[in-house]
Length: 138
Image (tube, rainbow, N blue to C red; front, side, top):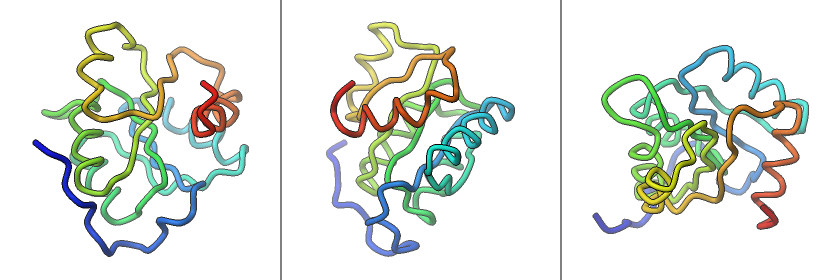
């Protein structure tokens, strides 16, 4: 499916590049990520545990970037969610996952990810890694 023009409307926060949506189905990991990002000066606009929830939150909250796990609860995975979010809203994802194998990366190219952060990682480094990826240095 070809990428369509991002929908207009929403919360009107598209200019704030420090707004982040976390998509992670492990609640403890999501809370650790949220704390690390808040400490690094990011505004976490929501926590989603499924692909469907991630798409809905992107529509209402308009984050600048989505930190997307690949394995999620529900019928769709993070790659599917990232592709839909990009097509609907023009919002890019950074995959934060333990699944960085070549097959998964090839399938994820349709989402045009900004980058990959492989788990496990030291969560206190998350803000720094996010800055590196967004600056094109990773």
